[in-house]
Structures are given as structure tokens and as C-alpha cells.
Length: 232
Image (cartoon, rainbow, N blue to C red; front, side, top):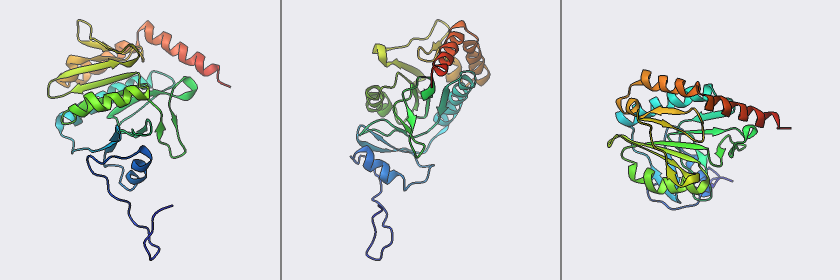
């Protein structure tokens, strides 16, 4: 029930401010007052209001979104989103720059609730970090790991560094000698690190297509289809 004034009119809920501490339930209740184009996150029980997006962040996010879309298009049972709310737990409701997940019918660990929010951890979360590096590399990383995210990619634009964490092994992925990063959770998801840094979209997308053509990706697709076929 919405709070009301003495005249029976709906009273706005308190606004969200950087540094506010609250539960996910209270955060979500207040956040629903805001328009969709305003990014506010709850990370470790603390509210973070996003700053306006500048060129390095926006351009790099768009390139990574293209990579994820191309992989999704070639892999059944995989969905992705950008700046979507993910309800991870009682103190966590972030909006990853990008994420990919498996649908429930294909063995995924997240689901949609009645309001079409994603509940549970996506298999892969990605952040483009500039002004948010300290948050993305520490508090947000911890939230993702504790929630069950399996891989976490952070591209730090100022340092031109890529960090790709593989939480099940408590380690980090490394690029091959050509600078190509290869996901373990999503076989065939290849990202050309130097091309991302140079914002070379043709080279970046060519690398994804090569990953999709590998035997590892074909075997992954077969496993996904087998999982789907076993569903009632």
C-alpha cells in the first residue's frame, strides 16, 4: 500500500541518495518511483547513484553489447541485457552494464518474477569501469561472487585493462598470446582485448564469429539442447 497524506493523496517515498543504507526490499520500493533512464544501484546494502556516462564508457559498452548479442544469436537458451536490474539478494540490486544468463529451461540459475525483473544471479556479469572502478572491482565484485555469478568481466577504460574473474575456481582468466579472452562458462565467447581497447568493431566481431565456429561452442549447444529436451 502506498503512503498517503491526510487528504488521501499518494505521498512520494523518500528519494534515494548516495550512501543510503537499506535492504533490497526497501530500495526496490523507492526505486520504482524513478524513470527507467536513471541508474541507481544497491550494492552491499549501500545505495549508489550513477554519474552521467561519458565517451569511453558509452562507446565500450556498446561494443561489448554487440559481442554479447552476436553470441546470444548463435547460442540457444542464452539471453542478455544491458543496464537491467538484477535482484541478487536481501542487500543487493545492481544494474550491470551487461549480463548474459541461461534460461531456466536450459539449466539457468535465474528467473523472471511477476514484474519481469531478473531474480537470481546471471551466469556472466560485465562492467565498464571508469569513475566506478573502485566499486566495480571491490564491493560489486563481492556481491556478484556471493550471489552465485560465475564469471565477472571488468574493462577499466582509463588503464585499458581487462579483468575477467572466474568465481568457481576463485581465479582469473588470462588472454592467449594474441590477446583473445575466452569464457569458460560460455564456450565460444571470445573477446579480442586489443580490439576492444582500440574500439575496432570489425575485428572484435570477427573474433566472436571465430569463437562461434569452434567445436567447443558446438558441443555447448548440444548440451543446452539436451537439457531443454529433458524438460517436462
